[in-house]
Length: 209
Image (tube, rainbow, N blue to C red; front, side):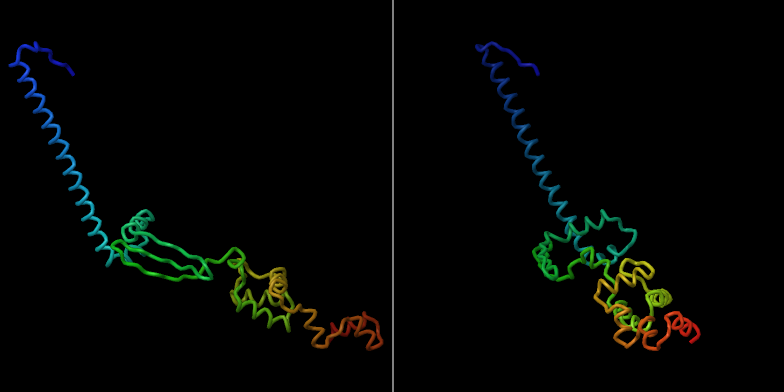
């Protein structure tokens, strides 16, 4: 930028330069004002666009949300357009206080997420069935029966002797041995003493019915 020099005694030149300076100041001021007005217009247009998007989402939201072609970034944008904020209160259930754009509010209660142990827990119906089967079947037989029915453990695995035994212990089910004793069953040695024969003969009789 170059500054003009002039003779202070030459008032004509000074007045001309002052007028030119004032004109440039007015132009600068008008430019700044126009820029601010344009920014306000831009903000208003953006706000109108957002409102239109929200109105469209009011009818299309479920379809767009479930559409497998909708990317996650668009789902996040949809949420930002609809929601002002969400407050979560955790208890036995989770309470969600939702405030929508525009001031509307809604309160929802949802089940609390399962912890790691609960996620691996075996279905109570399966545990109950194992409890019933233990009265008449070995662990190996129970595992085979459950697998034939297409059932799975809490970890999504096929049943084995080890898994059935672990479920029996974890859920406090009466062990197979205790059930047999409760039903009046005797061990080989006890049967041998009762009959007055050797344990080997008891085993032979057992094999031959």
